[in-house]
Length: 117
Length: 117
DNA sequence: GCGTCAATTCGATAATATTCGAACTATGGA
DNA sequence: TCCATAGTTCGAATATTATCGAATTGACGC
Image (cartoon, rainbow over all chains, first blue to last red; front, top):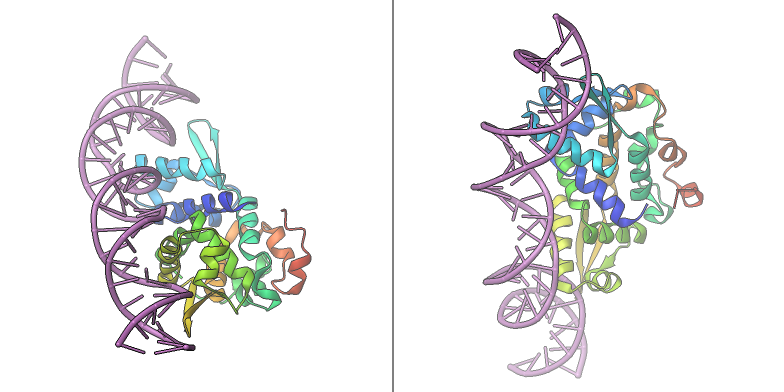
């Protein structure tokens, strides 16, 4: 991943509405949610939700798949993964700079982490 | 960390110039770099660099400390750490969704990772 | 075909961010 | 005090982004 790609992803996430959508989908897991459920959950006008969903989709952070009359959106975990790797690569000259991230093994124990809520 | 705070950090990083600065400082480690070295390394006019440094500093992703005539900027690793935790919290319904991040233990082995460059 | 529901696109407005030369402030040395 | 250097702030043009009602497209059942 290059600077431009990473900046595009970060910029897409750097907005309250889009970050809320993305987090919702990240927590929803691979099954995802349809557009109506998203705009409903976040009390956002459908047109606004659609605008932001299109943006997230365009940069590859989420994807939508039509099922009958609904479009199910889900987070693209691998692009989030790549983004985190980009951010932390060659970091901090070998010091242990990310204790919370390190403590999180990206599996089930994460849910028990004192994540600083 | 709340949505608004995270969005502010992501938005700050969501710009080529600022992301380049931040990555430069992340790789520079705790010692950091002074403003001139940064604008020099990135071929950026001092006024532009200063504008972006101020932005990153305002949201807490970096900090500057004066030393004689220089101001040494360095990355704030703990805010990056908190941001990553925020992004990945309660994610993916317990599936192992972040293999690359998981493979990175945030210590010295990271530098040997096949990070997908 | 027609009505209905899910979702998107259009469009016009409003707000916010970016750029960077020039002027300015701060620090340190002669 | 005066000069040089490091860095910031000002300012004004430019560019980008967000908002969301209304119109539109697409899918389904009847």
